[in-house]
Image 1 (tube, one colour):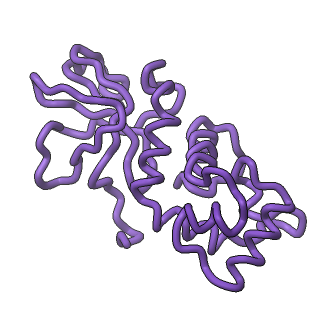
Image 2 (cartoon, helix red, strand yellow):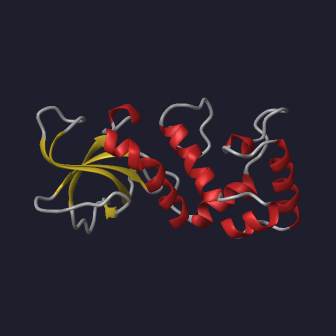
Length: 185
């Protein structure tokens, strides 16, 4: 687990790459630009890449203070609106990959989410989970905590929990939700 006070991402997943781009964050800054999402805090970031590098959507890159191989610097945070259309298009798939790679972390949400109000449970904020699934998830996790997405799928009948969580994360990043479950504001 990462310390709660840690403000910086160690790794990010590439959303888009412009070999000759202009920075959205720093006026007048030009060069190979990478749009990415941070692995831990799900921060949308603009990165300055090293020259003559190539990037694939979904590629995991080191952006921490030590040991960067393809990234020169983190220029700053981006809003969803500032993302290129390429980055917005790849976001759902990249986020799903990130969720699957960090399965343990995201499965704990199925075990830990609590009611937010008397009428709304945190689990119901995940697309595809209504009252029926929410009650089933709570009943099953009370017997035994979930250990994997397959476990959730098998015991509750929820189809593709990683995709459901990824969809919610994209909604939160796009600002389509008042309550944030996954994205730190």
